[in-house]
Length: 411
Image 1 (cartoon, one colour):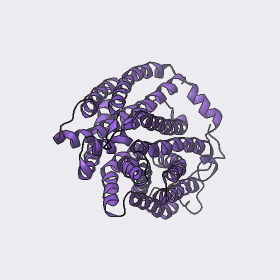
Image 2: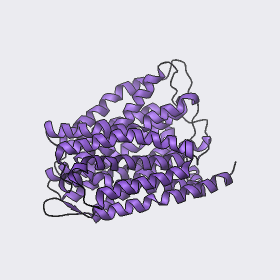
Image 3: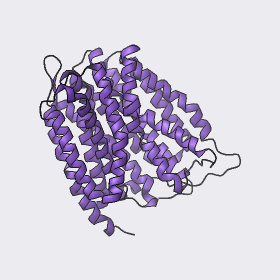
Image 4: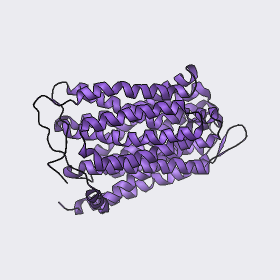
């Protein structure tokens, strides 16, 4: 797959911490693009006069289009400069997110979310490609973790901030407008950061081809790793897009309590994701996946399968967010063992696409199952919780299968 004609971006060594911080900020706004509807989707549905269960569609269509955008980007990003692909995707995400905030009806909101997702997929592919190929190997893991930690940070800071903006600055439209402007504000420094040094010659990057994607996808260890990723992503989006509506109308926590749910969940996620990675290094992927399935079963079961005391509603629902992110950490970390260094970018593109498409399927399936009752309460969350728990227990089986397959792969 390497091709000498591939275009590349080289990042000079000086000030690399600032550059990683900027890439982390770009990853943060990309994560916010995906997660913003977790907190304000219910308000958008109410404001546009559609049933509450339709709120999950704002997440589903974004994830589906991000998966398609990731596949398109996987095939074509190598044919343009990383500078153009990153900044172009970032500007597109910003403009279409602003359109979300201006949408006069729910159909146009969904259309704007589709266009936003098409830009978000290539954006994250460009960010991770630049990190992997431009940051020295001895600092690469820290750089990648800083970028991939953006999802938890989006929950810690982004979700409560979105709710505050929604409550104080014009309703559900304000967070979309603020996020879109934030994307556009990051474009000029990103363009300057990726400017080639005078007289510098860019090194060649691997060119991802359709044939290369298919060859990698056909291997059993690849399919097993992607099954891990898709299961975690599908099960997470069964619940996350509907958590705000459930908290408000089933658990009765109120808007202040909802902000605390996301604050607690995001804060715990910053701890549990790192703890999960540490556990995988110390005790191995299989025991860690079993422990995570057990923890998720307890937390999700407590939240949705039994009456939840009012005093426990906020912390337990916050824990739901954190254990779901930790579940994804187990899947992502296990799947990183699949690709060789030469295949890393190709496999990352597949992972990004599978993640987004599985998330879309999960959010879409939840919209089919849930029904809004009189008073706004959601019926059917208990069935989604049971399915989420069942999927969690497939992870140890897939981790065992992956452990058997990896020693057999071609050198």
